[in-house]
Length: 312
Image (tube, rainbow, N blue to C red; front, top):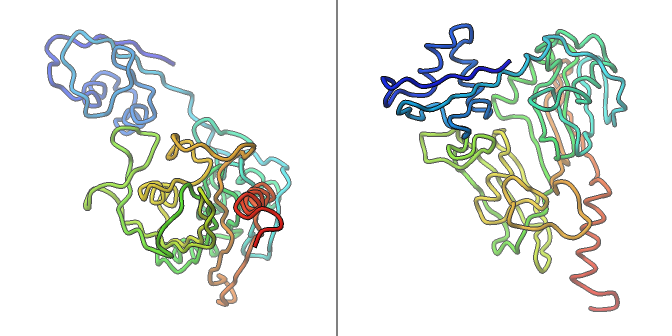
């Protein structure tokens, strides 16, 4: 469904979202704001922000995509299961798989695969994200826990809020990091200039985000890091490392000017370790996942370049 409207002369200096809300009354203001944020609203052909001020005479086009169905269809997709019991399912997600349905990614999600594997999770948490308590970016591989019962879901979400879930990542970044370790404590929020990105924002304008990193190995033009999260913001590791001038290899969103090594595809970021308190036994559960071949092979290749065979 699309709408095309013309801004009247008397709308000078009126905000775009408020102007639309007064005219497209069948759509809630929240829905309109989401459409603006997702780039579905254009003023004279250009996507604008909610607070964009109108001056009269512009053409405003609103494209309203069909709403996604409220029920997720299970899809029998193979999962790399690391652990499973009556309460939790721990999987090693491959790079390229989306965790749950979203804009442009309606099918072949981890949530749909988990639902096919364990149909009883259908009403755990939410109908579109059954059992999903945390997520990994599409191109990030590694460990993720899915709750199989509502009790497990409630327990795991509480642990995430209390920051007692431990998540450790392996990352390969551009450049040689000079110091051996460090902490980035910088708030993250939606990038005001690019709504599809997150960004480090001034204190008070974003949510607190804390990332700890340690150098594992240096290469001539790259550095392998061990990274741990104290908080879990969207794109946190990618945003924080890019803010240091060391974007993750393969990150086209935050490191578009930094080219990855030849023949490497995807994001060089892997969730290698995960630990949490089991919802039923109350014992600490720790899991690990080996690096995927694409990252392992890249590290080996960089090692061979850094130290040719036969050298000391």
